[in-house]
Length: 238
Image (tube, helix red, strand yellow):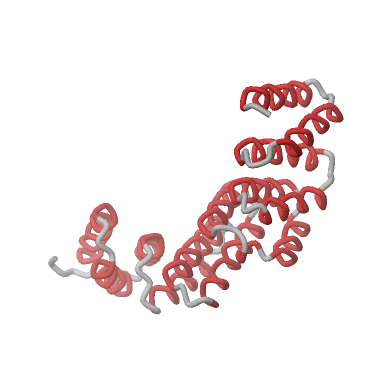
């Protein structure tokens, strides 16, 4: 199969889907999947399009099977896209059950999973977003990968903050920072929350330690501005 014929078939499947001829679209996409061979791009595009059809018709378990097939082919792009389509589309209870059953944190890229968590949180699916971030944090802790654990905990706190649970977010960030986190999100969000809560001295302590741990210029500028404000509140000079 040439690249041109693959492109034409995928276009035909798109037209069939748009016109409501789902059976024809499925037939075409399954043909592309079967004939794509080592053409990873075609396989990924066809599988993701097919999964969209499956989810639209309520065939979630079949969609999940295709995600596992993508992982078995080491097609990580398609696997993450399918994963995100599923957790975005199905009820939260079903999505949480899938997380337990397939343990995506052991098979998918953690950055991709945290990206899903961010996107889900922005759409208000806080339970699923928090569960994904927590699973990444737990797996990173299991393999003693502190930077990625802190990255996941930074995202987990953001989910709780967006879900109007600021105390939970603050608890997560405080603990991570106390353990030595140099994560930029944690440093910025923790110090911001402390400043908002008028906990001036703790905020100053966090900012001072964060400035020693983080060399990123934009973050340093933000922290230095916060430090100057807090010093004014405490009646001290810089």
